[in-house]
Image 1: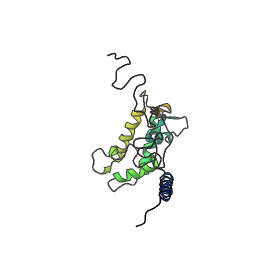
Image 2: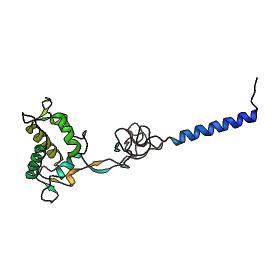
Image 3: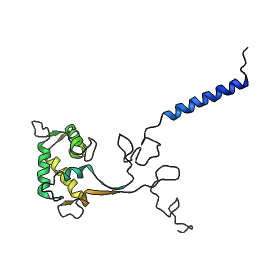
Image 4: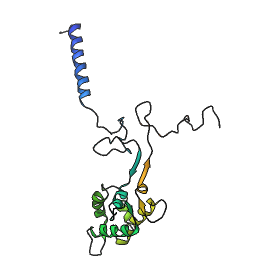
Length: 199
């Protein structure tokens, strides 16, 4: 019966170990996936399908805000009620309508892909379809976009400025283990009590 020599066994084990390490190192996990460290990745992060965006917080615009920006006809960087009405009418005219003058809810997803940048962007087809009949009427379409406009109009003056089109996203800090912090207020230990055991 063949018995390998200790020296040969040690060399074989070392080669096998080196091959395993090389194989593991050559296959990097996708950035932004579950368990990855870079900021913005993973579920609920700011990264898209292409990977880590590097975004860690600050001011961003919602997709519907980008739509409203395109309605600024006079270039003064303010969207007023007349521009909103004209913009909504132009968007409605661009949609494929049925013989009942409604738009199939699925067509709203196609519209959102170009008008809002993504088929799943909000407001989505369900937000437009108030009575859930699978069809979007002109009234439903106008009402939804007008409500989105009002929601962004913080001072309720009937106009949207660039500042009102932006929302703030909190900056997340890196935790010691390389992941993203969970938003614990600084200066407070876990449990919500102030330092020193005060109540």
